[in-house]
Length: 279
Ligand code: MG
Image 1 (cartoon, protein in one colour):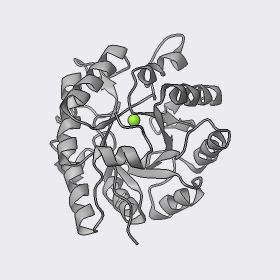
Image 2 (cartoon, protein in one colour; image 1 turned 180 degrees about the horizontal axis):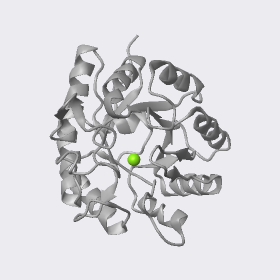
Image 3 (cartoon, helix red, strand yellow; image 1 turned 45 degrees about the vertical axis):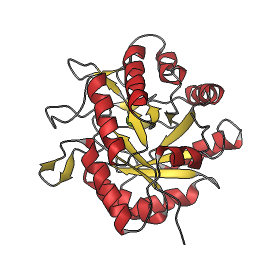
Image 4 (tube, helix red, strand yellow; image 1 turned 180 degrees about the vertical axis):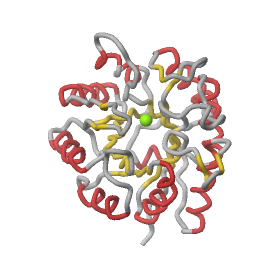
């Protein structure tokens, strides 16, 4: 059986890891775009982007920062850009509206977190159903494909409801997020079960937190899914060895894919697999 080509997403910084933990973590738009482009050269076709305060590295959410990263990546590559709508650290009145700023910038994809989640550090990742529906609608209107992030089984149920009500265009595209406390645990059993529950015809990718990144992405690769790697999920190449760039993780996936005879998708091929219009 020939599996379809592998889409590699690189999540270059996320909102949590800091330079004190790994000096390679990018903060400024320039650094973030440079990491995305290094990863593109290594074989990644999608960059998942959060932005940071360039000085402090704290999670930021400004239109200007997102816009600069998007422009820099598009100026240097044909990579697909996936902007986060998770909105950590947004303060003030209308958090839900602010979280939709990235959609207005016209990236290729935006992450869409359908369910809420307790984090181990005490934070609650709140995604109220009314916001989720609004976000799905706005993405549809803007021609931005949602990357539906699910951290647990119930999130898949909720996503299927959105799909059945026509709020998400075909094929629905899922990011299965495993091993994040307190979402689903990062085991092969969990991954198999999540995939089994996806709606028919769905495209899917998987990520694993920390040391689970390598085993889970390898399982996904063998199962015909796509993969996400990068500093957002993991800072170490192996025990005690920090990656100096996101590109190192991408290079490793490309090596594994080669050994396992799975071809890697170019950005244009990723676009076709996700049924996105050519740019
Ligand atoms: Mg993210």
